[in-house]
Image 1 (cartoon, rainbow, N blue to C red):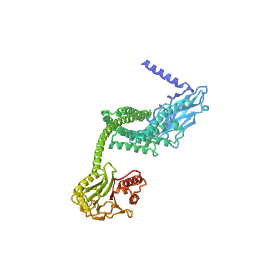
Image 2 (image 1 turned 180 degrees about the vertical axis):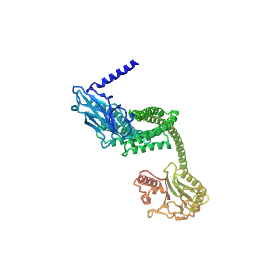
Image 3 (image 1 turned 90 degrees about the horizontal axis):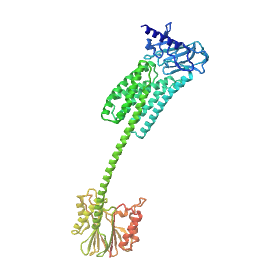
Image 4 (image 1 turned 90 degrees about the vertical axis):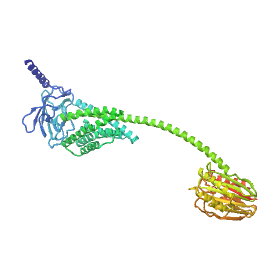
Length: 640
C-alpha cells in the first residue's frame, strides 16, 4: 500500500513541476491544467476541466461566469508575437490578459451568441510580465438549451501567434480541398445532366455536392475573421445540413429507379421543411430543437434505405454494390459525429469524409449505369441494324418483284392500247400515249365496224397507276364487246356507265366515243365529262372546240349522254386529247392551257398527223421542262 501511495505522490509532484515551470513562448503548448471557474453569484473559484462542457461538470443553463488560469513567462523576451486559441466557445466571451481586454466574440453584456466562431486572440508583448505569473481571464455566457457551454470543444493553446494562425490556415486548406472536390463533383454532374436530361440521379447528386459546399464554408476559420455576419453563417450551415441528406435520398431513389413511397416523401419533405425553417431568425435553443428533429429523420432515412439496398443487392445490381461502401462509411462516420456531438460537443466532422465517399461512389455508379446503358444501346443498335438490313433486303426483293410486275403490266397495257399511225380507210390517224408512271389511267382504242364505219374511244381514269390501269383494261373489254352490238356513241357511254358504276368507288372516268360514218360523211360523237374534240378545216384554218360535255362515268347510276352530228369534209382534221396536255405545268406553275394548244394546231395545220403530234409533244415537254405531271394521250385524225 505504501509504494502505491508514494507513486501517486510522485506523479503529483511531477505534474506540479511541469505546470509550475515557465512556458516556452516559442512553441505552442496546451493549457490543460490549473483552470478555475467561478459561476455568477458565487464567491469562490473552483477547479475545473478545460475542454469539457460546463453542463457536463454540474452547471445548469443559463450559465454566466469566469474562467481563470495563470501562466508564467520566462525572463527572456519572446521573439515572436503571442496568442491564445480557445477553439469554439458556447456562446459569448470576453478574454482578458492581466486584466486587459485582448478580444471578444459575441456580446456578454447585452447577450449576443456567436458559438459558431473560433477564438484566436493576440496577446500584445508589452502586456506580458516576464518571470511572473500572468492571469488569463475569460468571461462567458451561455443561454441555449442543449448546449455544452463554456470551453467545451478542446484544450486551449498558448504560444507563438503566427504558428497558431498557421495551424488554422492548414485546417482551412484541408476544408478548401474538400470544398473544391465537391465543386468538381457539382460541375461534372451538372454538365452530365445538361447533356442527358433523363438522368435525374445526376441532378440530385449535383445538388448534394452544391449543398455540401454551403455546409462546410461556415466552418472555415477564415469566415469568422472576415466579418461575415454570424446569422448568415448559421443559416447556411443548418439549412444545407438539413436538406443535404434529403437530396442524397432522392439521388438513391433516382439511381435505382425506385418510386418514392408515402413514407419516403414525408421524410424528405420534412427535411426540406426543417431546412427552410433554419433560414429564419432563430435563437440557439430553437435551432438545437430542429437539429434533434432532423436527427430523428436521419434514423427514418436509414430505415428506408435498408430494404432498398437489400432488394438491389439481391438482384446483384452493380450500382448497389458500389453505393454500399459509400453509404456504409457515411453511416459509421455520421453515428460517431452524432454521438460525440450529443455527449461531449466535440464533433470531429467525420461525416464530411463519409459524404465525400458517398458522392464519389454515386458519381461512379452513374458512370457505370451510363456505360451499361451505352453497351445495351450499342447491342440494340447492332440488333436493329441487323433487322434493318434484313428488312431492307426483303423490301428490295419485294420492290424488285413489284418492279418486274409493273414492267409486265406496262408492256401488257402498251399492247392493249394501240399505237395508231397510218390509214384506216379514208382516215389518216396518229396517236401518242405516254403514261406518267409505268402504267397509266388513260385509255385509247378503236374498232372497225365495217368498211365504212370506224369507232374511236378515248378515256381518262381519275388518278394513275395500277388501279387506274386496271379500270382501263375493264373499259377495253367492255368497249370491244359493246362496239360489236351498238353503233350509237351515246348508247355505248350509257352502257359503260352502267357497268362501271357497280365496280368504281373513286376512280371516276371521263370518256369520249365517236363514230366516223364514211358512207354518209357524218361524224357522230358523245362526251361524258371529257375535253371536247377540236376541229380544224382548211378554209379558214381556225381550230374550234366542238360542243358537248356531259356527266362523267361512275358518278351516277344512270346517265343520258347526247350524240352530236357533224358533216364531214375532205381535209377536216379532228384532234382528241386528255387533260394531261392542257394541264401540263411550267416551272413557274403556269398551265399549258387550251390557248397554247390551239396555236400549235393552227400553226402546224399543214403537217401530217405524225409530224403534228411530234410537234405537240415537243412543245409540251419544252413548256414543262420535260416534267409531265399526268398521263399524256392524244389522237389526230385527218379526213382524206
